[in-house]
Length: 203
Image (cartoon, rainbow, N blue to C red; front, side):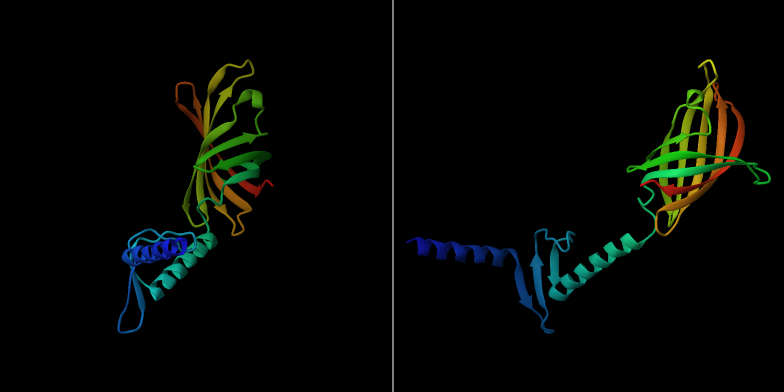
């Protein structure tokens, strides 16, 4: 009795599968299937529909190729992480270096960022908080804002640093250049400075 029930159950399962996936052969002897449900190929989910066996294989190869290409491309989230940074303040007209000091910056998933520098005493400014985005290829842009204080602890305004960065092919170093805009408490721009950075991934 149990054997008969198992046989019936197996037969019903095969009928259900046959109804769900209609398989047929065309003149070129390709095996085709109508797949009305989601399925996975190399951890990817192609749209359901009619597929030839060769097409499924091609889909698998295309997905794998796209995945590898994505891994090999520069850009995207490759800037994420924490970086040791050397900041050089420069003359905006001549590009001559004025002074250099270390900083540390973190680019987080989702496009937010943090910056802390030794160039200004921490009692005179807050850490920089900001955003970053991928432009294309190895190019990125980021922007930080920090609030400034005088020696008595009174707020004096804020500074916005905006840079564009170029990441190397190994994603372990970058260089950037940009400006620092200094505002007073009323939001009036007092002056604009220029700077460049070189950075190595902190590990």
